[in-house]
Length: 552
Image (cartoon, rainbow, N blue to C red):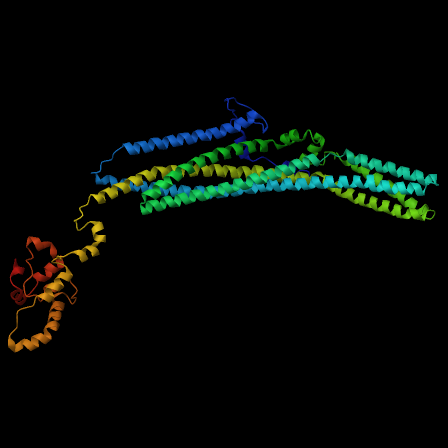
């Protein structure tokens, strides 16, 4: 990463907007908007935002209570039939608006929940990476110091016994011991990352734990909102009062959840924005007791113009290792021919110095500011961009969900009342009324139970046709009339009714007695207009055959 990478981070505009929200403690005193999570007044300022959302919930419930009270107390005129259609349309459009708002709210909620989860995941990922870097530095330092203090000391002790008769060789061993102590001194001068590593790991673990349950809770709330909306629509379609009543209760509970989530989200968004506006200041304050400000400033800004605080220690480390390797090479060249048993210890020291040099290169790479600064910037981008943006979408979801359920709670009582009025109107219908819908639904059962059949009934007419016979014909044509009677009757019916014998008045043809008068009051409604037109268009022969009743 280049030296200008740190300049690339600019807090988004929505963090400044949220940062400028009034910060008021519970004593209604204005405080600074600096991010100080351990300060009691600052915590109260965030709790105040949650209390504002709670006050909004109270006003919302109060407005719903007033509306429902007015709806229960006001009596509409039941005789004015014109008012039914507008009320029905009002309920329908209210249900449509609630459904659309719920769908939009659920969509916005899913997006906001996903964005927030992505931001928090990027934060925890960066924290784990930084913790891995610091742990690697700590392991390299401890490993190198352990090798110098234990391994090198053992080899030098044995060589000191071997070279006891040679003062120059013993002096060389003492010089190497001084170099080893110098290396250990430089390593001890490096900052102790152990405490910082534990804090980062604990923060990452706790953040991941809280985020998982936050994401799962919002997922359940989104599913609950969608299920309640669909169940309410089903109750309106089925006109089920018990289902609407149940959804009304769940709607109130979900409304409370929406306002509670709004308060939690806005408080979290404001607190996070306070951090995102000035993150460097907070980091410097948090690490002043663990790491020097020079080192923290080096990692936060990572500029080539800033001196590397570890450069001097690493340089002395490198020079000490080089000096020791030169001394070992000289002993291998001049002392081994005289003391062959010293070769094993000298090779062991050489191997230890080579390992220490490899650790030095890894330590130099890990202590470079570019790795930790990249993790720092990634964490800021995840929290301040994706995280806060997702929280704003979740706030919008809470507002839309609250509006949707308010609309639903206003529409359900009206729908419940219309269903009750409709059922009451059905109860007022005469049970003997043939046009009663319930009577028509059970019509087949009533027909089977009836003892007297309607005059216009097809079955009754068929019974009359089978029981009544026309007058006897002359004997000379009896056989012919008997054999051709069904055919002639069918042909007469076909000619009379346009070729279709399946009419209600078919049984009236061929009867011995004429049908009732068309104009008689009891039977006026038994004939359809087509039947009346057909009877009136009969010929004179047919009139003489059936009688004079058709002329009435």
